[in-house]
Length: 125
Length: 174
Image 1: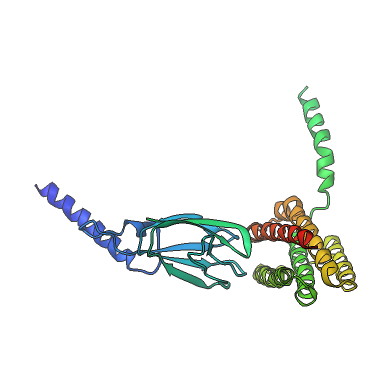
Image 2: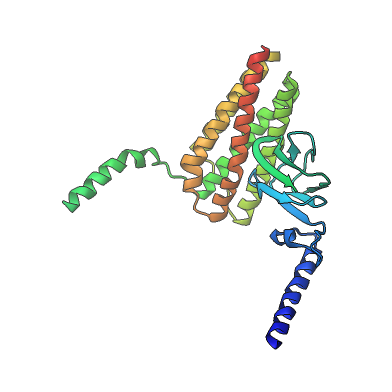
């Protein structure tokens, strides 16, 4: 019984710290794990870094209501522009970022219009 | 037998090592990078003002922006590493080629200017990429310098593809 109690305590602790971590603006791989005790998904923020003329990660899966922040770490501008017109960051200057909250489900292929070989995909579930 | 194998290996490798005999130092690489960017900035400025096709003008302006950004990063790194860029034969040849290109472009107008500028951009980015792959990246000894070159390489690939697309567009409209 004491073992069970300790286990419950450890799980709760981990859960608690994960939730706290998710409150930060920095999205991480853990962001997707952010769920309430009732199994509902709370909105998360994910980061896509634009560096070396590539999107990192190039492929990202998020939930409806989540926000994606594109951060440009290259010394020149980039864009995140979906092929179907769903979103377009326009030029994001060196060191700047742009964010968008996704309210509808869908699969979006996007590019940097300034550097067409720079491609990414976003899946909103 | 073992000695012969070594001798054969040495002979086989000889022509390859000769091709890369002109090893460059980090100080020379820094100079080549800055010069290569500057050459494309100068041509881009000219295209932004003298180009006719809107996409050509836009591309010229983007070359100014992108290569200025890379140059700032390269200059900052050189300063951080206390590396004084050192002039060399490759830089001199890049500079002379760039000046020749500008002189030629200034004699042209309209569609002829656009075509000559874009044709040269395709050739130039291809040549710079070849130099990066064969000499600059493999010869760079400082890890930060090598990392910078590796990180900007995809942008030059993108520029080359973009220039090729424009070349095809111009061929259709003319």
